Length: 355
Image 1 (cartoon, rainbow, N blue to C red):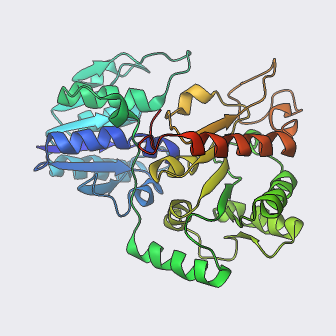
Image 2 (cartoon, rainbow, N blue to C red; image 1 turned 120 degrees about the vertical axis):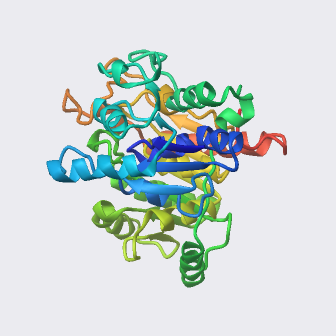
């Protein structure tokens, strides 16, 4: 079967789709599963064998009308038998129908049911529930597969050889050993409301280096390069580093997490790299509800303050005080980091990926 799957637009959501992708591939190992993506989602799957091909989405709202028409024609020429829409937009469903794909499977929402040949009601639009479970529901609908608890929670990624070489070079320059450093991730495309103050990250890094004798590396994307440089300036310690002066890519971030011993991160896409590579992770939550992105990873601890105003799910604090992150102290986060270490050390040897 020639099957297409319209991938999510967010990095974390794309990683959370990997259990569904795995089941779709296993259900038809001789068939094709082609991902339709919006950059940089293609980089998330670099090195992976979950997809047999990738097609860049050229039908976005900013694309000229003639480019959208050409994209529909391109999909039509692919002669897909079926498409699974992990996206919820009216646009992606309309494009799939105009491309003449006979079987179009997706969620019944945003007035697009008539564009689908098979639709499922979403579990809930208001009650927080893991998006990973929704993707698995679509995969079950298509394949008839009933997910076991372990496999429905198992995220997976791969790394490209060139990124492995970049890690080897970086690790050699900074004397980093596999499994013996902590990755920090302070960014998040969602908005500023998710950010923990960079000076707190610097203070936390110094405490980890001095009390645990573990080096710390701050990940960053192009938009966070200056913030990462500020982090190393504030910390001012030979064992505290960042990727700010490296050639940045999602592939480099993936491989840095893969070889880390621990990760401390905001609720952003790269935190799911830790689960995919079985790296213990402490996630700092501010305005977002934990349940939306929960993956039931056994080697994880979530840190969130209980406030009357949250979680509000807003990109910017509507009350202008940002207490959900501003009131999160270094002492609190370091205590959660110790809790994570204790939790991991007490896990049975066979209990690695899913709770």
